[in-house]
Image 1 (cartoon, rainbow, N blue to C red):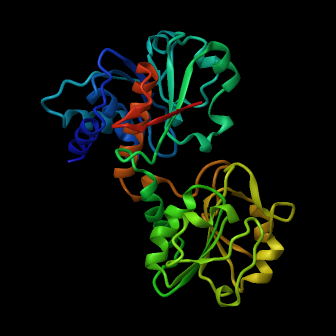
Image 2: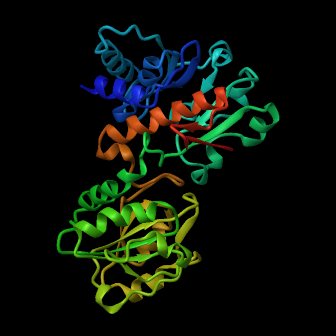
Image 3: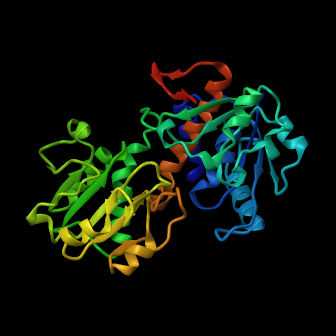
Length: 344
């Protein structure tokens, strides 16, 4: 049962939010777990939601309540709200940077107590300005911390390769007996390559030259030099280019971008760009008849989410983020002698 996985993760992280009030989101799909994890850790939880294309307020509340009810012997204190009132915000000890609560700006945070903490459900280098008003947060002195997704009890990065394989299948291609190119400039690369290189015929990697040592040379062909593209002749027929570049909200592939469309056209016979993360110029790709997948990704967002491969990575990520909330309050940056958070 899903509830058993949540209980197991709370125990693994020794997550203790007793006596604390958490303001987070109630959401659809795999993200249903966030308020329940906080409640299982002993918190009083306010779970805010709104109707989106993923589900109505009523559906989300109903599904989340069903998950709560499955914890038959555990009294969980979750209050569902579809309006963020000053009273609710003022009670929170922890406010997560979850989707329905974003952006965390002055309009909302002006009602927060001075001691409130804000955990980010991602690593520090993945920072997105659009998520929150950092100037107001600094002005108020709120404590802000990012999650070490590579902590052994969080371990979200080891799902990145599975996500790449899922995106390959979703695009209508497959890894078996096909060659791929990984075009990357960030910490996702080695984790994607570790999995993808084992299931495809051959993988070539373009990344910053300084990152070459992070890849296993036995499983890949290193062609380096990001953002320069220099595709070997035997990769001209590569099935697809798995593309991930940070900042995610920067247009990396286009006519006036660091990666020129013309270079891709010249060096690949029938290029397909798999948009793992990082913006591309869709209009120019269309004009040049270059295929890309997915067809549209909101600027700054990933083209494949951990939730696409199931509940497990989201359970780990959200539980890790809540552990960062606990750590921000206690001042303990480590769990099991390994850093769990990074102050922002």
